[in-house]
Length: 66
Length: 262
Image (cartoon, rainbow over all chains, first blue to last red; front, side):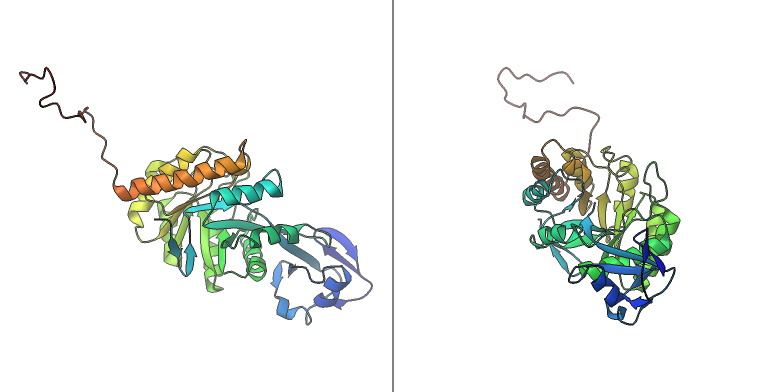
């Protein structure tokens, strides 16, 4: 299935929850926040939020800002 | 003079410093050390698994200075609100410097989007620091929505032009004496910061003027000194300008003094 991850096309073998997705993608232990289809996904709901075909995922981390 | 508070946050300086666009992480660190700012602004960006966001955050955390996350680069309300929510989770603060940009060329904030996003974020429990123009009516609407802090621009972000409209900034200070007012953006020289503080502004927020200076750490110190000088001037009471010269040295009994006919 096809998703958009941080603006780029990305392929997933099966639907999975955000917890599993972050681990598979190497974000384990990193300080990140997630939005799906434009809406914020709280950390407390990662396990119960499933990524499906066509979803748009944004993963962000701290960065310099003015 | 420098210890003050915004809500429950104790601040040790009236200079807020941005963390972007420094030549190197080391220069950023030295600039923060020189400025000893009351607050540091930070942001969020897309991160891949090998990204550098964690390294940056470790540097900032080490200073133990309150952070003010921003929604820089957001052009819409939904985008700004979602970014604020992600920032709250990452930085563990309800503070948000709300930027909703309305114009590409000047980076002028969109007042309509700003009001809409502010209303939503206050409902969600955020402490909104709105980046705004110096418009008096817009300020009133933001206060009506519950903002205790207003951050009018001095000039467009990164322009270094200083205070484009001192009259409007002074009006805001006079009309909102109980609100926390911060000049945000457009400052280039330490004298600009001093001028804002002399108007009675509570703080100034700047980034590019330090980050892009020839010697960022020295400029950071210059701004810190200017903020203190301007604040002292405001508190001390600046004399009113006069049309006529008035001698500061008493003339009576000056050698060769004589009474003139007038």
